[in-house]
Length: 183
Image (tube, rainbow, N blue to C red; front, side, top):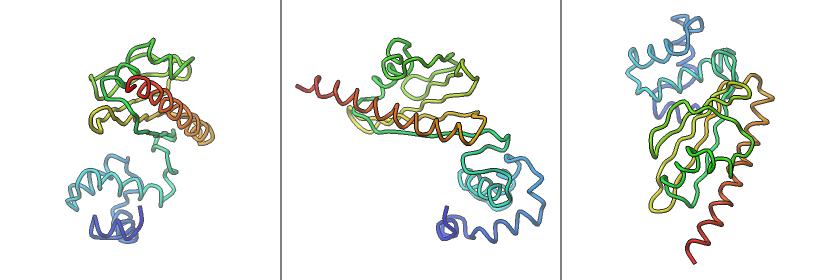
């Protein structure tokens, strides 16, 4: 987040936010307490309070980009695809369909909301996977993966690349299905 964009949205730049949070020793607080403090004290909307809290933690060396305060990393990737959320939901939720685009990945289903989100635990390493779906009009949608609990930055970078490749392959697979269906 640039200093200028932050000033426009929150009324102050990074230097003032860091000074204000240092003044109350926010460095010693957990993330949620920092975000709540910014939200309640400075009347910032929740999203901006989170953004400010994460930015402050990065400036103060409490976390790296893509890292949570517990030290673990998170990877986010998404693609717009030629498929509606109904088809995407089936591709994610149903094991046989999922195996077509995510072969060899063993998961335990934690929860699912039809047409919106599916959450898994990866059985190999216990990390968490959330797959969100969003409609972009008739026959188009967004699939977004959030893979959390990754132990190292190196593993996170490998997974960022891997998820990009997996989603690119899904785009191609759905494009082939779409083309065959439209003929």
